[in-house]
Length: 406
Ligand code: JHZ
Ligand code: SAH
Ligand code: ZN
Image 1 (cartoon, helix red, strand yellow):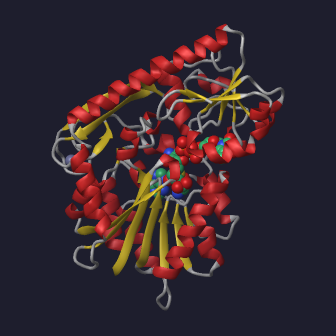
Image 2: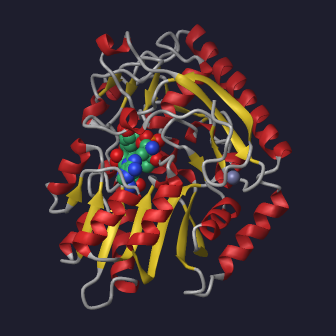
Image 3: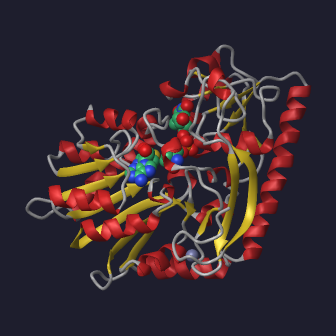
């Protein structure tokens, strides 16, 4: 069992245990389901640096490989967001004579394709070969490797230093985060920035977004813990911006210590975290109890509507659905199947709970009475798309931040 902090070596105190869980994006065939991998999904907080992190971890090769199912370009909202990110980098950071940007975990090229289109030097470091191929098909340069200090040294030797190192929903996935920070130190130009956008502990606690907890999310960052981590490795946290993706994230900007003046947002968010006692044991314990309440309520609603003979379909098969269905014990008796727009998930089973994943057309064939919205962070996009379901009398069941039937 892991009890030492991956950042500072301090003691990690466990505060929530979501039970035996498989790897969240390990969608599988019925044959594979017989020898599925499980681990104990539990989270703790470091008593020294406040970094919230998994107690046990899944080896990275079991999570990222040639059949990684998450395709970042699947949502119109995400495509738009990352294109805007690219434009912002092009306007503000990549303005020198021959700029170079490295993205850690570029996935299917959702961000770098816009950089490639602008003709700017770039490299995606992406170990999952299937999604790396999708990026290459969009004209993106990709190195299929896990990022760490060794990779950083090789990239620097071949391409020179980078003006921007970027990562989205990836940096919190890497358990050897010390090696990542040493690697960024090696790779970044003196005036460069390391920018990463990751789920925010503050939102997870505030919105009871416990389904953001799964094997891939090794760390649950806060401004407090990221600032401490930055300082440990010779960096300074110079900006922290709240962004709406995945229900609420923060975009952190790290520069070399003393190189840039920190934005006022850093101090403001730190003060807010202190005032909320975000990383304190009693806050995290309250979060755990709230999750238990959501579990009881959601199971009650699902059992009631099923007892009335109503049909329920799951909408979306995000990684989050693995946590919810396995922790709550939601099987095909309550939710016979889910629909998801990602081709590579269709025809497979949700890890652990084994709910079948079907293509979106199964949703209207015929419409169910209720749809349990697993992809709740895309609620606006999905509800607009599925207006006909609502017009036909269909109702949505939501469970974050609380159970609601609308
Ligand atoms: P979505 C993944 O999280 C995993 P997930 C990972 N660990 C991470 O950190 C973030 O991404 C970046 C489907 N869908 O975005 C597509 C529809 O069916 O919440 C997706 O399978 N219809 C890397 O998995 C899922 O829902 C639609 O109209 O929690 C959403 O997954 C839309 C918009 C989506 O990420
Ligand atoms: N940036 C995209 C994709 C996030 S999915 C987005 O925000 O939507 C996370 C990606 O990180 C996966 O494609 C995975 O293969 C990659 N990844 C995981 N560990 C990594 C590592 N050590 N180095 C580089 N990429 C990694
Ligand atoms: Zn620590």
